Image (cartoon, rainbow, N blue to C red; front, side, top):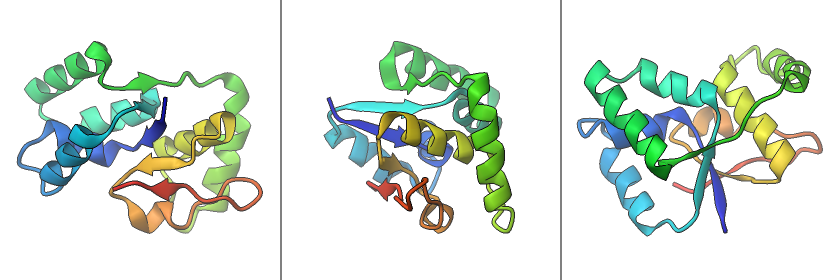
Length: 134
């Protein structure tokens, strides 16, 4: 099954019909056959930007299988700190760093994001970039 990493922006857009990216994200997901893969920090970031009622609906969607959560381990902290340090000039938020860590752990290199400015700069060890699918 195809897996695609998902950043907070598309999750916010999907949950909030008034978001300018809602239609584009919803259209992508209608066509997408596979698994969306994310982390708890990404879900927390998405919820932070959603109204309380929308957060409830969003979490119910996630619980119903809308997204799979890759668990982070304490062993990830050093890599997260290294990426944050490398990209201090952007700056990289912690949720983005977790997505790079998941990509490194799983080999999943496709990402559903609207943050092309930052994700076009980020690199995995060895220089590989994540490939936006939207």
